[in-house]
Length: 119
Image 1 (cartoon, rainbow, N blue to C red):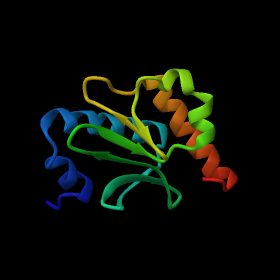
Image 2: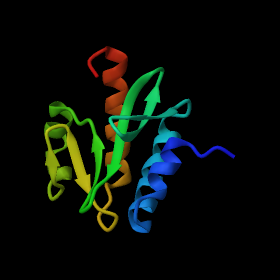
Image 3: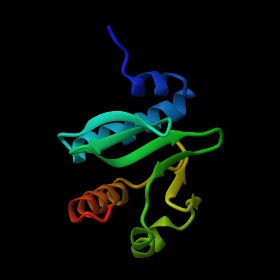
C-alpha cells in the first residue's frame, strides 16, 4: 500500500498536532467535495480544479493555514482576535483550534476568490 505524501507528512507530527491537522483535512474535504490532495512548498495543500485552496502545516509551537487575504482578515478581525498570524497565514494550536464556522467562511472566501480569479 502506498502512503500519500500528506499521510507521510502527518505521520511525523506529534499526536495532538496530527489530530488537529487531520480535522482541518477532513473539514476541507467536506467543504470541497472534489478536492485533490497534493504537497506544495513542503506543506499539504487541498486543491480545487488545480488551484490551491488551503495549505496547512505543523510547526514547533503552532499550526498554520495559508493563505489569508487582507480582505478576509479585515472582515473577520473580531473573530480572529487572539490568534497569531503573519502576512497571509493564521496560527492556531490543538488546544485552541479555529471555530468551525470561521473555518468554513475562510474556505468559502478562498473558493470565491479562486472562482473570481483573484485568489
